[in-house]
Image (tube, rainbow over all chains, first blue to last red):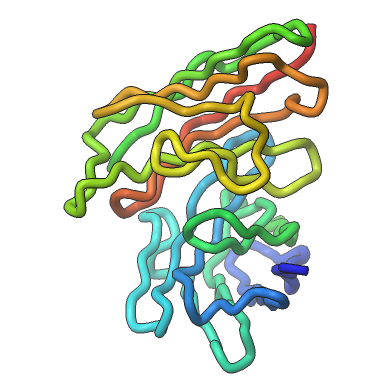
Length: 113
Length: 112
């Protein structure tokens, strides 16, 4: 069964940091661009950023650039999102997904308060 | 950035009747490779989104044929030929032609 499982969410104070992880099974991430996407309360989906198969290229939405860093470990079949200088506006459910958007995790909740 | 505008915001529909959702982009979504990377997703409450349509009109594996996508240039449409109870939720268009990837605001489909 294809699975992406996010972890690392929680409650953090403004200005704090969190590191999210996304572990894949039944799905080999090394063949895919991978994205982080978030859903804030009462809002729509927002693409956070993505990373190329070999990790040599990353792209971010303007609102997180310079604060968030996406990385990957293909040997561990895992994706990461380092989030620094968090603000209340970063409160959301964070999903990892293939950049083709055919495979999604169930999400992990980040609350900045 | 390509701003994606979806209409309507909400769509109450009768079971068995059709539904249509529009998505308009502020910029051309034609990639340098000639493809238009416009997809449609469906999200039920408490679940992650699910891919329905990719590259404007291609139905993803396992998606019922009552779902269809069409469009060109900057205007795109998702149609459900006969709405079923399991189709409730929020529908999003998303463009993956250019960075940043951008989503429409979402259309909530509910049963009358």
